[in-house]
Image (cartoon, rainbow, N blue to C red; front, top):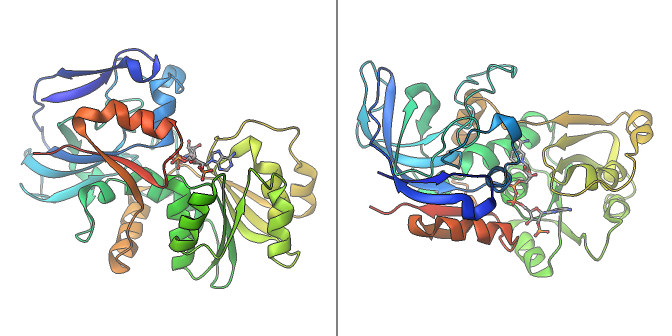
Length: 338
Ligand SMILES: NC(=O)c1ccc[n+]([C@@H]2O[C@H](COP(=O)([O-])OP(=O)(O)OC[C@H]3O[C@@H](n4cnc5c(N)ncnc54)[C@H](OP(=O)(O)O)[C@@H]3O)[C@@H](O)[C@H]2O)c1
């Protein structure tokens, strides 16, 4: 079978296409013929060695796949040959609170990932793919989808009529916009690009701000909420955007801390966090139980993840380069072909 191996952490040039022996499923394992995979910002960090000592080399990158069951090992009861499935980001986080142990085993980081024509998974780490989704769309759910679900639905504490702020137009943020609309919230979205802002509106954003032309967008968000501030910020910028997010959040509101896209810009306004009783909630993808809940909702509402572009397997390095260029709106995917 063909795989891409990251042989050194030198960026896209470190990726090599080569042959590896076909894996065989052991007891309670499923062999998947992978049909599609999607990229996350994490994968751009990974190919540059951004995961430090926790990252193995050589490494097959990418965490999120859709595929068809090719063979099952002894004792597999949940799946049969031909089933269409997707894999969970954390195979060992079944439910409940996270723990160090439950974080072990994420594909494309500590262990080999899914940029591989076949891969073996434990049966418990797979779930049925929503029937209405294409393979690339189903492959978008595991990391970006579940992270947004955790931020908006699990930790958001939202009610219909509440207001959510999303930042930028990457994978996590567009899922967050869609889930916020699903729970009946008003959504204010930012982007650096007016063309993408027009697309945000089409996707349902109620108000939009260009964060490049309005660098103090926190005040603008407050103005858009009559001075009150939003109930929830889906924070993907991190240290570089947190001060504007703090400014944008209502007294007692929540900032879901997810990403690290923006460089630090001065001291954090922590006194405001204290005085306005804001809740800073770290989010790390989610459990299999949450994954299944999200999938049920997506299937019920026939929600469509936003897929910007699909590259063939042979052009996987071009997919990384495309995402690194930051032109994408939503998810970048790779389709494996027959
Ligand atoms: N904690 C977790 O479990 C978890 C899970 C998934 C992702 N993440 C993190 O979440 C972040 C987003 O991941 P992703 O995969 O969705 O990335 P992505 O698809 O590559 O999204 C990148 C987009 O973010 C926007 N952006 C960049 N800098 C920004 C800034 N300073 N302010 C506002 N928006 C900015 C840009 O949108 P425009 O072009 O529209 O400006 C850019 O296109 C990353 O830091 C990633 O590591 C964390």
